[in-house]
Length: 391
Image (tube, rainbow, N blue to C red; front, side, top):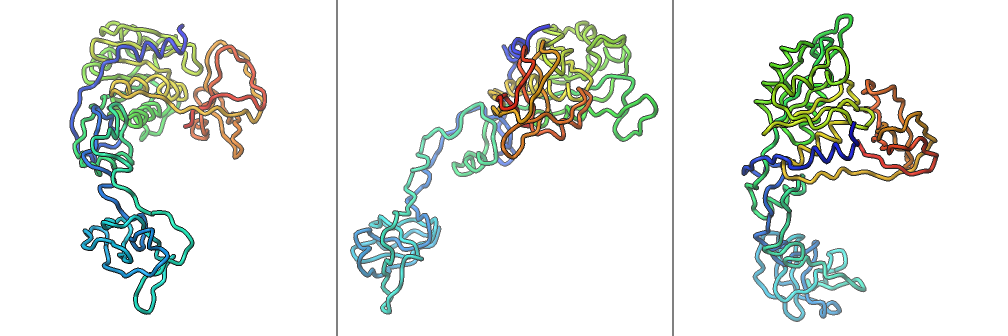
């Protein structure tokens, strides 16, 4: 049995990386950039009004000003602002030459002669200067970063409409066990619905991979061999749940080896999820995760997701918050790193949810996060801080 840290290091060292492709930026959400992106334009591209008002010279604020023109967003000003003049301007419109201030409409009045008078004591310039956000040639987004909605806006603003991104790993998902039936089937006595397969497929999609659900494998060596062989041939990563512990029908690791898989570990000092298997062939990775759904959920998040992100060239740094315990927590054994589902109250304190063990997937649904308890720690007193990974 190896440590959690050693297992993660084996998974993320010398990673096979995906090829790249160009995609329409409108379809690039959550794809990982495979190139640095630079701006081809200043942002803003010109001095623009930050609000509706009048463009003028600050030195004229104490006197009446003649209005020259109305400048709408998208217009190019015709008149230059000179002493004693101003132009009415709309938010986002180009500031005319000669103006160094935009005064708010609410801080002005018009005289009977139509002149504009500033009525406040002071004002900010209220001008967004050309290039103050981004200058032509600036690096706006780095290679290896997942594209989020706000980045779509940047790509649109700089006209980068076909970004180069990493191809998404295709991940084959299989569940093992004679006790399993598909979700649409009402389970007979001794049977249960296959929840793991669809949970893992959804986690693959959430990790920006392409999920390939490949069904249920019965507890039969020939069927298992055929399914693993097919999965290894058709996917970049294969995930099996169940069949990896010490039961009479848990022969998955042996079948993996017979299919050319170099098994790098079979047990990890983590709870839940100790019987986790990881191996690789020349061009494919394979995980054997425990059959209990909490174990498979957690071990996907802490082991499989970092690999998928690394294959796309992304550095995966999961967010963890250091929060105080709202109650005292004890555990009998401290021989492994443990993840416990917890809730966070309105004061930012954490407490474990009702949790019956690694088969209790409903506990994950009710939790706000996973509390990480280091190996060797038996007790966490109220008020002591510990790390929580938000869900």
